[in-house]
Length: 140
Image (cartoon, rainbow, N blue to C red; front, side, top):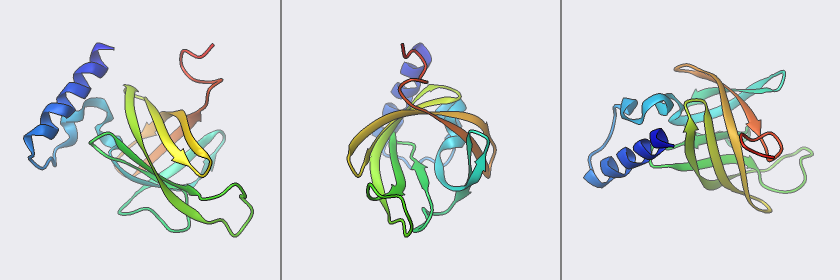
């Protein structure tokens, strides 16, 4: 809890300074997740993503921003049969630990909350597991 509070306080202080940040080490262990990620595929129960310059018009992906905002590009409607239409949905993220993020984001039917477990992360690739209500840390 103290680690998360310290991280949030640091982000708030730095954001109020108005300077542009290029060194993301100030965000601690979650610094590598900052950026845009697009889906490459699946491996068992993990989603494989690669770092990208921008979200794709035809592929799932998300952007994790250093100000706590989260943009998820996903299915724009209830029907997932091709042709799938994608749209960007805005939300927020919060670090729970060095490998767990809380996500609250819109979708075509409202707002959803879930967690992302970071399985592995390097400069260009990311492996994650999505944790929903029954699997979430602390869920009963």
